[in-house]
Image (cartoon, rainbow, N blue to C red; front, side, top):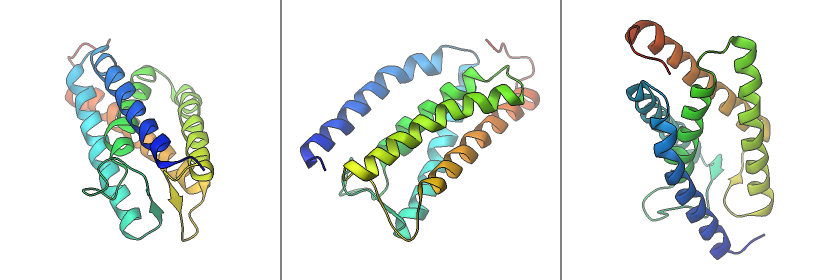
Length: 165
C-alpha cells in the first residue's frame, strides 16, 4: 500500500491532467453544446449512482478529494469519467454497432485495470458486501453505452441540422 501523501498527489495529478485535456476534448468537434450536455448528464448520473453505492457501504473511498464534504469520488464522478465518455462518444459518432463495441472495450478495459490496481495497491477504493470487478465492468459498460444511446437520440431528434464534425 502507498501512503496517503502519494495517493493525494496522484489524485491531484489526475485532476490537473483532466482539466488540461477537458477543454480540447469538448471543443474539438461540433456541435459543442451536445458534448457539454453529455458531460453534464454523465456527471449528474455518476453522482447519483456513486451516492447510492456509497450510502449502502458497498464501495468506499478512504482517500478522496474534499473528504469533509463528499463521500463519493468527486474526481472520477465529475471529471474523469465524464471526460472519457465525451471522448468515447466523439470517437464513435459515425461508427456502426460492432465498431462501437470494439471501441467501448478499448475504453472500459483500461479503466477496469486501473480500478483493480487501486483496490489492491492503494487506499483509494475499498469494496465490500460482495462487490466485484465484474460489477464495475458491467456498470461502466452499461453507463457508457447509455451515453452513446443518448448521443444517437440527440443526433437524430434534436439537432438534425447541426454540423456533426
